[in-house]
Length: 207
Image (cartoon, rainbow, N blue to C red):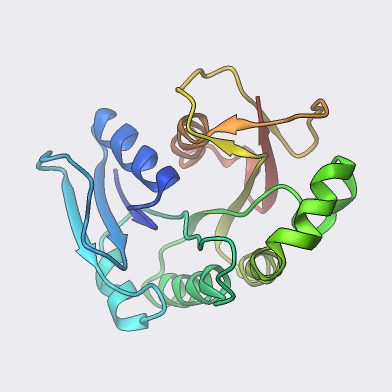
């Protein structure tokens, strides 16, 4: 299998790349900046470029079986990188007839907002602002496509270890202080590539 990962230099992206290589998957790692992934595996190819550039995206995903988007921006950045990047990815995938897309959003996007703990709703409104709106728009773009898409909504990402003890589904229960490690999110993403259980679904992931 060959996958393309956009946002590969991010904290979740690096986990996806490293775990994929450990599983023998060929990886095209894409990011705006030169790679700081310390891996010389011959199955890894890094292609720096802008995910908003259609020609670049098409070159990157050519020959891939699946595309993974873990694009993100720092809090305070108002640029719609996630939505516009996924818009470009969707367009490129359609033109090249690549169907499988997994893209990372966040719990609290769209209808999941209603299930956020009260404190998290305050954080969304006061701190996340444009970042949350960008993810909402991204979900609209992806879910309106005819791709075999899955949207994942992790709850409060941490840098904890891979445990395999997380819960994932359309409706999962969680306590007042939910979280999930990026390593576990990457594990779910790679398991979900060939698992069509969650096609055309938004999936919550929590510890």
